Image (cartoon, rainbow, N blue to C red; front, side, top):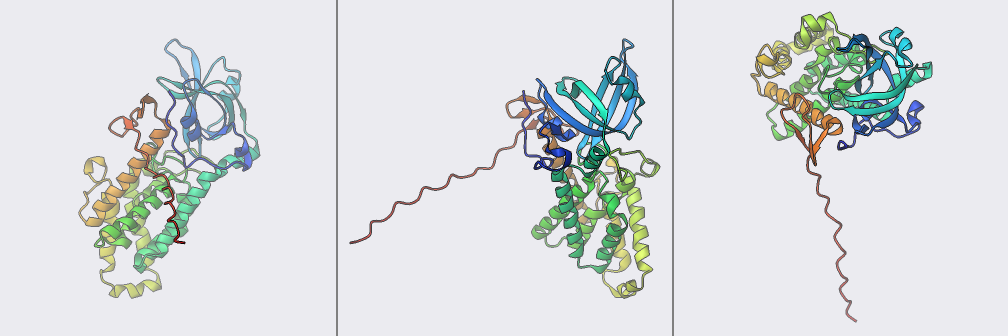
Length: 376
């Protein structure tokens, strides 16, 4: 049975670089469009890893983890594959053009069958690194929204802090994923996640006007800033390497340290002298912002060193969780196996099978009222 296909942020108009070919798919589109009987498609992606393995019977095969701007997919090349020798010698970070038939395997999910591979040309690599136009436009719009939300911040301390962060690390943020798995786990995913959290924060402040808008928006920007050293990707690639900073400290501790450093850098600037008379005091603002970063996972068992203890901290935690979960639903509706009409297989870490949401009622246009006869 075919997965239910919902509109994707990865859909794009034709006519840009390699993306004009109807057979050309991103990894996200392959996952969304592949059915049990198969999908014939082409794919251009980077090799994240290539691992030699063996079956229980001792038959060798090569496991390739491939990545593009929309996600990752695993391909398996058996020893009798026509391109096995070339694939075995390809280093991690290389770029491949794949042409084949993609099918749903009951245990492995989407896999390639009857496929061939070749090394990408320089132009194909450049097109791939640029990403599909639809995703590029979405992430550019999201980054512009972040910049605008920062510019509308009334507190000059939080505004200056956010502007300094974007100036120094904006490019790195645009190639950082929001997570290694589960949600926004793609190049630039952190921009999408932070922008949507800012939109939610501003909307929530309209409903709960006692919330500190500037602090909550700054929290949305900085809550995952430590992931720039945990989930970042290189300038020319989609391989999310593991880094010691992320492994030894994690993104919450790294984020607290980064914001502290940026804050004290600002206090050394001449313009900061005027802030000494502000209420709330400088150090109060700093501590409350750091608390948002430290508490955004909500509970200690999920990695937060402290639980939320302010209205903004609990609001940020739920905004973060909501955006992550809704992204999991969005991706799940595109990729999860159909179990029954309107029911799809569970997508971890969501807690149950997915049920298709109701469509929004669009009332039919009312028939025009009959004309009233005009008196003669």
